[in-house]
Length: 220
Image (tube, rainbow, N blue to C red; front, side, top):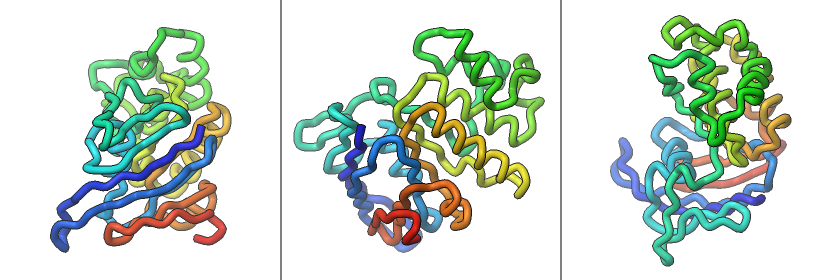
């Protein structure tokens, strides 16, 4: 299913008010990175796609499903969109174990799938641990597993690797790529690292002063 984006939203930046306008057609099952300075609108775009904030014009269509349309006054709620969202701060529930956090992400309870995700992300031995006892890399793997637990068709990752050391970063890059391929999803990921983008992405959307351009990663 192709993701068709044509949205506008005004933002307050360090240079004053600016309109963000993103127009792109993203082929299914591809991995796309968003690249731009802090405050450019990358997270704003992810949140519009997720339904967490409302655009101020345009439309969002995923396959045959219309998620947002300003003229028709359509704005699907986040739970009605076929997405998994990994927040920059992980947003794990501190009172839940690793296993419970992953299970919480499911629409229909399926313990076999929980076990598969824990094995995929090397979390089986940590199933009874709560987030406070986890390292940064372990938290990120748990958050990624929870985002995939609902079997989304669109996976949104808000700077998933920003706070890791180089060794852990490379390891998580490989795990994200593996999950992207195995789970058969379209993935949109925010990254500030050019080498990381060249390694992982099929396409890049660059955002600069509200102007966006989508290019193949070979042209980046």
